[in-house]
Length: 125
Image (tube, rainbow, N blue to C red; front, side, top):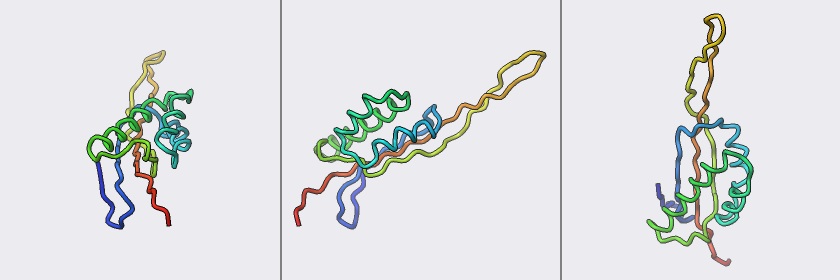
């Protein structure tokens, strides 16, 4: 979603990925590292992080930047992560068969990831 702010602070590009199959706590650890950083610095950080959660976030940042450059003709080098958040999603519950006819519950957690990119203002006061 592309939104122009009425207060003149610029254009923001918002992307949302829902029902990502990972815990919100694991995704939060990666999101905390990229919040407030530039687009190029974010790509370097996400590509070198050893966590499995970094790949879906990397795809999301790529998508947001591609939308910004294609739809709004913004320069990718001028973008930065203005807002990044992770919310808990639905929990998929499954039953695992165990000995003597019993079953244990398995909880597959999901999360929703929201990333907002803004253009850096180059105004000198």
